[in-house]
Length: 222
Image 1 (cartoon, helix red, strand yellow):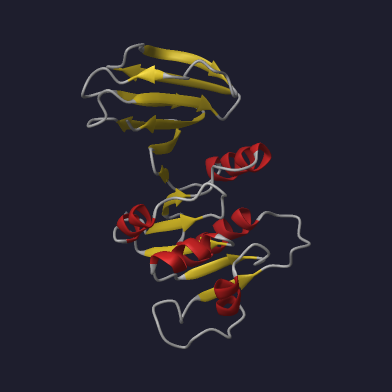
Image 2: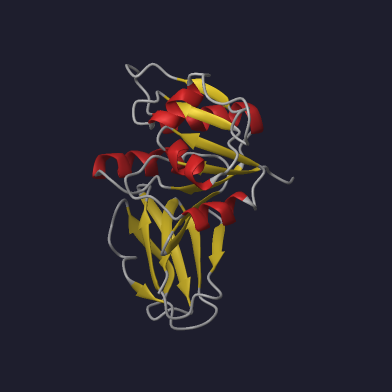
C-alpha cells in the first residue's frame, strides 16, 4: 500500500532554511503547519493544505490568514484550518496528528522544526511521534532522523564520515548496528540510555536495525 507523504512543520524556535523546506515540499502530497510553523511556510512561499493550532504564536500575516481575513489570492488562500482553544489538555502536535490521521490515514510523515527549543517540549514530541502508526522522518538543516520500530531498519549509504546516534524510546529495545566504528549485534538497550550516542559512520554502507521496541536515530551531517 502506498501511503500519503505529509510534510509536518512545527513551530520550534530552531527554524530550518527555506531551501530545505522547499525541497521537502516538492516531494510530498500534503503540507501541514503546526502553529508558528505557518510563518516559515508563508515566508518560503509554500502552499499549505492544513493549519493546526491555537494560533498563539503565529505572526500577524499568518494570524490574518487563519482568521479568514487574508488576501483571497496566492497559494495560501485556500488553507484549511483547525483552530484550537488555547486552554486545552493536548498539545497542538497531538491534535495535528489526529487531524492527519482523520484525513489521510497513517501517512508517512516528514517532520521538521519540532525538535528544538525546550526540553519538555522535545520529550513530548518524541512521545507523540513514537506512537504514530505510520513511518516518521525527522529532517532539519545539518541532520536527518528516523523513528524506527521493531522490524524496521535504516540504510545509511551516502553518509560516510558523519556522526550517528540513537536513543531508545521504549522500556526495552534490541538494536543492531553494522558497518560503523562501533558495532552492535542484537544489543539490549533500556529507555533513554546512552548506549547509542556518538557513533561514527566510517564505512559507506552503515545500517541500523531495531529488532524490538522503538528508537529514534539521527545522522549528523558534516
